[in-house]
Image (tube, rainbow, N blue to C red; front, top):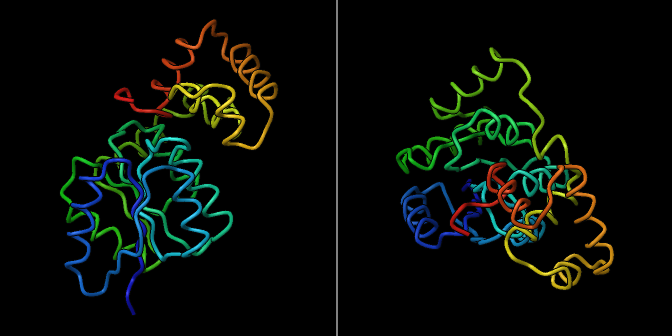
Length: 215
């Protein structure tokens, strides 16, 4: 039986490279590609692939919250995180969201094939550096508060959209809520995080890995 894979990354060139590599394997079928977090959630619901290769820094909805939504709805889907983030916080948050594997983007593409094979066997796979990050987190003990422990999923979603430059009106339209509700969330975010401006919120979102600095 073939393994049906969904690719989620906002960089088309990287997706094309991954697709080409994976499709060299006779047992892998790439069924679709997604460029943002909401798209991958929708495609997962529609196609129910066996494996999703998931970037953490997806626009619209980060890969951690996207993974959590997908796995809650489809527990049998295996998520492989593919990320530039090497911090123990990002690795552990992705694993807590239900990911079965974590691979660094700087690793050879062939490592993704290895990870797909391992997770399809019901096992976990961590790049050596990711495994080291998990060990560091265990040795160092609980880290300080982060966006994923301090904020609700809706607050993280609105924070990310604000940091990406969306207006309250656009966010309200995208999420099906009122602009007033968005403004209330923005005020609550600033109060909770003790921040004073949208620029401060953007810097916080970058520091926490909700968006990439190049966005």
